[in-house]
Length: 385
Ligand SMILES: Cc1cc2nc3c(=O)[nH]c(=O)nc-3n(C[C@H](O)[C@H](O)[C@H](O)COP(=O)(O)O)c2cc1C
Image (cartoon, rainbow, N blue to C red; front, side, top):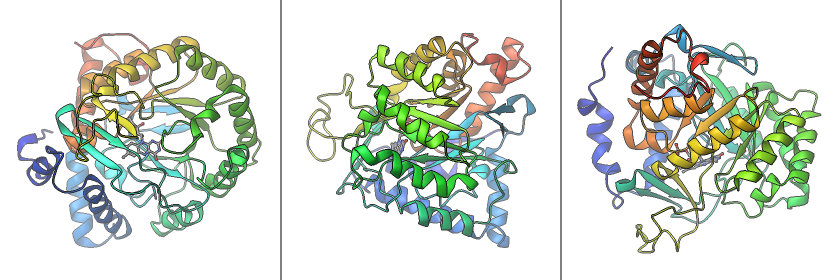
């Protein structure tokens, strides 16, 4: 199945808009896409929608059994997922499968509904294939999230074509020392619909959140959630800005406390070599608050997976995310030790054809290396051929 990228409708319609930092606000663009996705997910059985979706699955899905893996009890049809933050309210939960994803992480969801930070709070940096955001967990809250998922009438965990994870954060109004109760309330409510859950302690836009990565705090949080009677497989998502020693420590603690996997990395407060680059506000990246995503994170994302794989001794599943924008960068993350990978900024810039491009690339690499299943590539350190 070949995809003609240049003629792809997404590139024709959106290529121009996404290739410049000025013009339509990045958040407005993203919300328009989500509204269309929401409508389609609620109306999957309408003949015209179902026709469009069947065309989408023909273009984007790759059903190759060599990409299948069972990880923390879930069957992943392929290792590529949509990263947290795009579908914060779960409006596309019934649709991500049609885009070819093996899994999608919904959220971040907080117990209380919240508006997030003042706008503008999402900026494209097209030349660098990067974005800066300081959204601040804008979402409709856990109770509304539950209703949104129920309305879409999707299958139950274990019976879905696309695994669904929920990513949980702390509500801004909840004091830090009560954060564990806030996460627990959300998880208790949403556990029955989740294939896995993520403790997000790494977003840079909620004051104090990242201090929950400290050993004492993280132990309490994990224990509280693990003790819930219906706790699904529990993962933790970490920041790229931790020192290597702190990463090692988190890996040890996570393993001791029975965490099922680690997701690395979230957006970064580091500006890398882009400190002096000006964004739409007229300020430089150094002067603006928010987390950087996309291509500048690629190297650190790879380093952290490599580091974690060594510290966890190959027996804790890792999800690699940050700057993946091609089959090569996807392969490198898997070869470094990620069982699964996720994309966000790359998917926005490259468009939905990035999914089949990555999956086709992985299949070809497996053939070149003589691997029968993607599992054999995980941590293999085999270079891209
Ligand atoms: C606009 C935006 C919003 C995000 N929101 C969240 C979020 O709510 N929760 C979360 O865990 N990560 C969030 N992320 C981080 C992504 O999930 C991902 O970890 C990060 O962007 C690196 O991947 P990428 O380079 O492929 O974008 C967000 C990223 C972007 C660009």
